[in-house]
Image 1 (cartoon, helix red, strand yellow):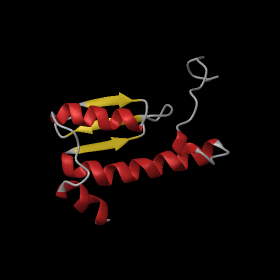
Image 2 (tube, rainbow, N blue to C red):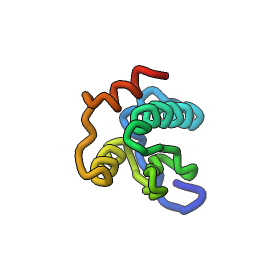
Image 3 (cartoon, rainbow, N blue to C red):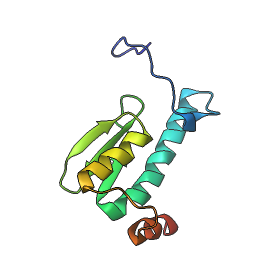
Image 4 (cartoon, one colour):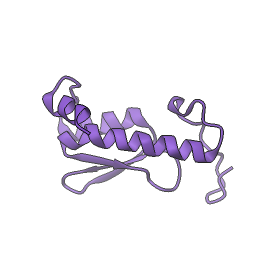
Length: 100
């Protein structure tokens, strides 16, 4: 149960497997945000944790920020805002992943 809102907590994402404490889950979430930002930077997006629970805040180069519950919806929202799917073979994508 969430202490802030009183709703039951959402089950974790499959990428949280192995996390035994809330600190572990937070570290994994921050790591995912770091990787997401390396990928999304080439498309003009950035991601961060919303600070109040699981999920992500996706911000575009125009300043539009959308709260999203999981990784799948991050990709869907970014593609919708771009007007085309994110191509993992696009040089913007491969450059941003290989350069740290």
